[in-house]
Image (cartoon, rainbow, N blue to C red):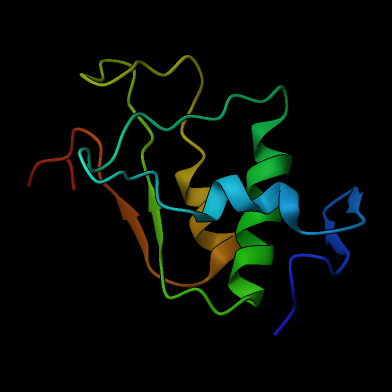
Length: 106
């Protein structure tokens, strides 16, 4: 299994170590609070998230938990089309979408 100090290629991004992925893979919980707002905005999210999803798949992660609000989201509002389908295809494993979904939207 790779360590945090092994180099990694994320699409066109060459990193000397995997520490840049740590914020994407750790739980954001404390003793007094479970979960908080997560969010990553990028000028080229398709390129970034496709590369990250592919890399996480290579690490053997069981599933990805993605919060991607819609244009009318109650926990943030999207300003671009969803990239979850691209993430799902690049990851190849289960993808959990958990923002503003009900039976009709699922």
